[in-house]
Length: 421
Image (cartoon, rainbow, N blue to C red; front, side, top):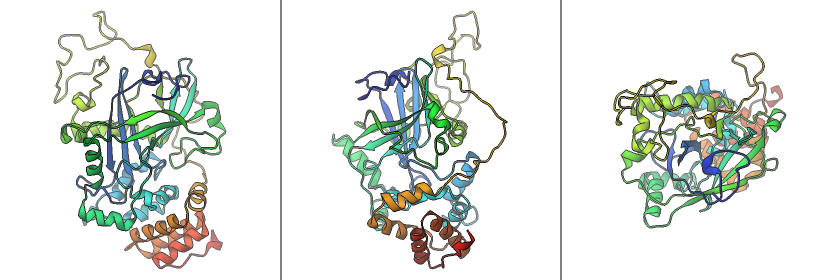
């Protein structure tokens, strides 16, 4: 800890400057299966497990501050578009673009993914983001919304599409090798942890839904506040036992940190533990890498295959009891948000999904960035049907006419009649 954020959260591991907490980090590609090249164009997973004295806290983020979709019901479908075609067993860019052109909110993430940020030069030279908004709650019960940013101290470095393709054939484990060897020779990479903090009252009237994971918060409105330093100074002793069996979930929280009503986050609270039970078994949290070894496990959950503990011995397995068993910790009680309105599956209304990618394209990127963005996007669109290309071009044109016209020229289609928009 290098910054004082105790007035925002009662989380014990964030309570004082100088406090140190062990962390396990896992970086990954997202779409591909095991053995997938480290340099392929893909978001990178940026997952952290904090072993705190109050239990484990997991941040399951990416190296991009936004995501493709904001509706969790579409999450399995999106993942299917990134995997192999069920008929051919091959990767299918047609399916990916068919999905994306029907989800205009995806084009913010696509503008990042098809820039050179989509091929970072190893894991050491990329940032990490929570992407989701979380809640921080202090001792008084005051609520602030928060976004996490881990800024690489090594500096941002990206590969061009051509460089990434060359490394794919020469060293598909490029990023993993670079990270391992750097740590092994005693040169630990580090990231500075910042947060954006928004008072709960501000969220009600902000210019867009602050829990929409396809949007970023303005740094002018909510500047970065330094929290601490993440330092990776030791490699796993066994890749399978630790890296492969690590189970991260945003449902692993500690008092003072809570999920927001971000719909994608709410969906992940259920889907991640369910995946772990399928992949690692009912007692995945007893595997050493997942065990909250700095906190006493005090619950009545027992049994199940691959139980590696004494399983509670002869103690009773219910609460309340008169046998001296553990009781609920009042500090773990969550905040009490007010809830009004009708419960149902509501639409997101008509949010402006083009303003932020437009600003990214026109104001953040330079000519070099835009040139590579157009080329990388067009390369990925090879083999995609004309009707899907035209739908994509129409969306790109709505983001910015120059953007749309350059994509149209690169993929060889005419710009659709924009007067009908």
